[in-house]
Amino acid sequence: MDSQKIVKDLLNEFKESDLTEFEMETAELRLRFGRGVNAGSGMASGNSFAQNNPAAERVSGNAAASASSASETVKENAPAASAPETVKENAPAAGTDDNLEPVKAPLVGTFYAAPSPDADPFVQEGQKVSKGETLCILEAMKMMNELTAPYDLIVRRILGVNGEMAEYNQVLFEVEKC
Image (tube, rainbow, N blue to C red; front, side):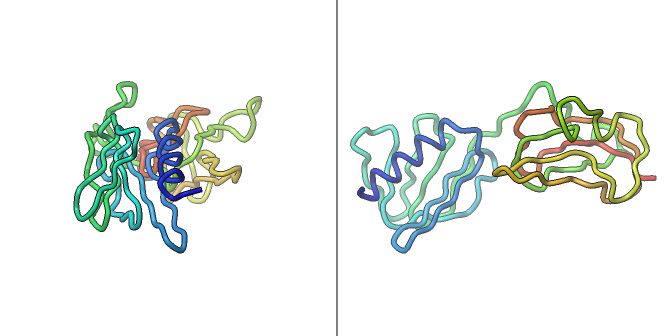
């Protein structure tokens, strides 16, 4: 399988996924796809192409290959471009209250508020939590990662949605330090 077909297939899979960033490296090829405001500063060396051209045009130098949605970018030996930020309407802006601190997702994964579907959630709004106690679980690649309280706190807002994808650095909780 030639590398152009591999890149084209990977970009199609990326576009259909909820991922915000994808990186792959082989002996002859390094790719990074990203979407969002800070898509990263990766490079794609070897073959690059424009997704909106079925023939998969080659791009060289600093020319960007932009997908049909213009939010994914692949560049050869140049930093990835920033794309327009998407705003979720159901999530209130972090830091709307001056004394609230955000607790952000340390990785991309599925947010789970409870250890199992029929169990009580780890925390509830208004609950006092001690440092090290579990706030939620983030599942990434079939690995369950506990997000623990970084300090003694009171949970003021739970912004993560149970069973939905959480992006890297997404605010999952707004808390007040104790």
